[in-house]
Image (cartoon, rainbow, N blue to C red):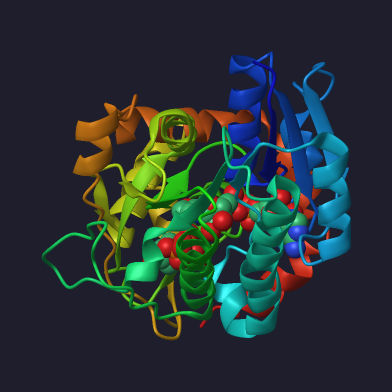
Length: 351
Ligand code: NAD
Ligand code: TYD
């Protein structure tokens, strides 16, 4: 059956992998990418599939309700996978309102567009909201986030994502609109904007620039290869139960400083440098305000009920990621030569 699925934020990091996967795997479905192309949106991420017959792009801000309604009416949309968001914690500390507009208002606008377009006929329809493990707050050394862990967001970013999750559930309860939510841990891989820890560090190591480590580097994150997240999204979209939440994670916790040291070793090898060379670039800088100590996801519900498993180990994923950034120098240079530099100077006053 021919279906039209909207993917929001498809020009961003995770969204571009999800768009590629759906365009390639479902040639009978039309995939409409809605993206505003903020600093984080880059159509170059989709160059290899942009001419596919089942792909469309609509440059729109999800804060604009009328434009969304028009697009939904134009394509007779049946499914939505909602990734568009302001996604960087440090930027949310600088500019919380941007996060309220896109993450909260934008999500409610999309829900409203679905309500209007679907008009109580929910057969074959789905609103799938992509969220983060950061809504659960911060863990101490022990324990895991499960689907029923109470929300306790600590940053303006996670508070805006938590708020959007609440709206999605409220629309399910109130208007019976079919929804699914997934909460994923930290992603890494090709096409990630170089303001996030791994691509930023790869780029700095390559250019012999300091690697800024916040605080003492003791914070812990659970890392998942982006293509495994995209595979999980595909599985959940097609086999998840309406009204349910699924946690997605790599079962792969790393202290920031340990991860950076491993990355330095991989980079030394790839760049033909003597082991220990890149580690000298590690520079401890002022900690992030309200820095969450640890995130760790229990994804056993997704593994048991829907049979998803990550396809690569962290060592494999990290090596593929480093190879990608080294091979795609042009991609990263085009980003770092733009506005990003001004932001970088402001953010990283090394102390
Ligand atoms: P990203 O910042 O790389 O991409 C976001 C995309 O959304 C960009 O293409 C941007 O142009 C677009 N966008 C932003 N504001 C918009 C607006 N107002 N209207 C239309 N488009 C807009 O983000 P990402 O890392 O790919 O994250 C995607 C989603 O996954 C987000 O919802 C994020 O909360 C969630 N998530 C991310 C991670 C992670 O580690 N990156 C982990 C778990 C969940
Ligand atoms: P980040 O990639 O921003 O993801 P998130 O804040 O959503 O987890 O950061 C990952 C971890 O790395 C987090 O603990 C903050 C830390 N970090 C640094 O130490 N230095 C950096 O330059 C950045 C961007 C992050």
